Amino acid sequence: MSLMQNLNTLIQYGLPGHMLSRAVGQLAFCEIPQVKNTLIQQFIKRFDIQMEEVAEPSLDAYPHFNAFFTRALKAGIRPLAGREQIASPADGTVFSGGQLSGDTRLTAKGHHFALAELFGGHEYDKTYQEGHYLTIYLSPKDYHRVHCPIDAELKHMVHVPGRLFSVNESTTTTIPAVFARNERVILHFKSEYGPFCMVLVGAMLVASVETPFAGLITPPGRGVTEWNYHRGPHHKFAQGDEVGRFQYGSTVITVLPPSMKGFSSAITDGQSVKMGESLGQL
Image (cartoon, rainbow, N blue to C red; front, side, top):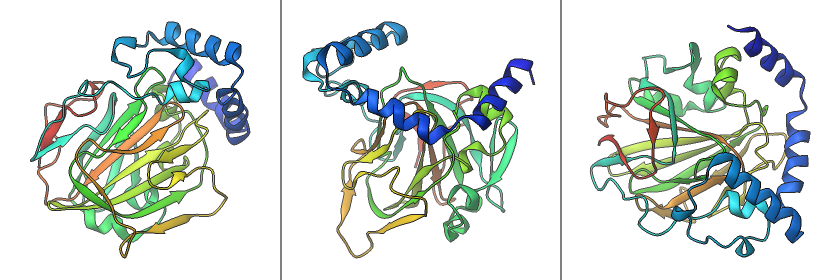
């Protein structure tokens, strides 16, 4: 572990993550044209945003910076993998993945933690014994909407409060089980191939996680919050339908049961993926 990694970790332990995120969030929602356009222009330049992919290229169409950050892409720009394939839920970089052990432990940059920790103590972890998982990191430059990897229906959603550590490689290497410590939203789905879940992990400067069916999810309060959809309303998604969006760079962890074939062995840590591309066979 380098000196800079140690320093970065110490700084993050001391930073008031939620307060800083709220402050940045206020700036991100500023509607003063000169301010928001300058922020967007600098962001495009800094992160080399591919504007030819963006559905609405005019900056005047965005009321604030955050509207641009969570921008839509042109229709068809991300082809879908198709039936019997697991589509990538997001643009990003693969952090880690593999098969879950009998005690459902995940690995992230050398650290191990139980699926029950990630789920906030819920018993769903038993469903995924010997199952599969894949972690995708969304950097600030990436498209920040998250999509359903297969046709499915949402049955249960849980918000687990927590810290807002950064989730870049330095932090995930030095802070144990950072994904199970950060604020997160867990989406439990049912499909014809079996249940699966997606964990949307918040991070430093993430002002909120938003879904198209429940609106703004974080931060709603200090305790665990649950939404049970078993008896309705029914939220059904086709492969590629949006299920959520981040306000800043973060992480999506997809967990599959052993009844599914899992993710392709050709997918490696550090690999870039695009929303919709095949991650493996169902």
